[in-house]
Image (tube, rainbow, N blue to C red; front, side):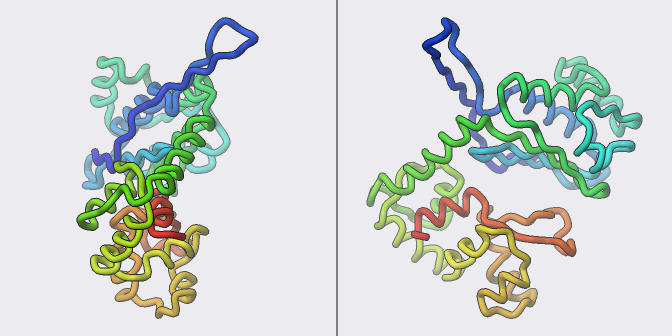
Length: 276
């Protein structure tokens, strides 16, 4: 299992004047995360080398496993139904082991448990996606109040700590983009621009701005006055994907005919740092 970033679960306590009890909720309910991870371990094909990937953002957690769900679960059923019971299982022994550890309740309970945990926390509904052949993606949105709070904190970090943050190398800039550093000002922004230009290329800012709206590679390169060739993809686009500043809509199928690219939350932090 590969965890790209870690963010602890946070609790918010809100007291109301009209009742004695305080309202409590979390940015991500633990039960939903536990069930989603257990399902990924249970239903992954271990004949494939692709690991389970977990990405933690201020506004969501995404859990990606391979390949697609077992029949009859497909993209249409995932969109239209909340109680889904699979009739086939890839790893029955693993499932029994998870049940003994009390990490799962039983067969056919995974989706309802996740929906129930999200609703009980007052969170938006989870999103389940698959292309019916190669991947299964679970998105757990953050509670709206804590998601907005996290976004505001990121914005404040990028504007309030003038000249208080400096970078030695690209690794430290990546750590900042992943939310591991506090405060950034004009001095840090100028330094970051220099390091980025020397370590990658000088078109990072331009590309991140264009990709604030999802865009195909051909359209992006047209805006950049670059030819849509693999050498330009390797030089300009691939480094930003590897750094986590740009993401593909179909990460497991690079040549998907509808493939688009977008600036990630980390990429937006970089834009805030070096000046949009």
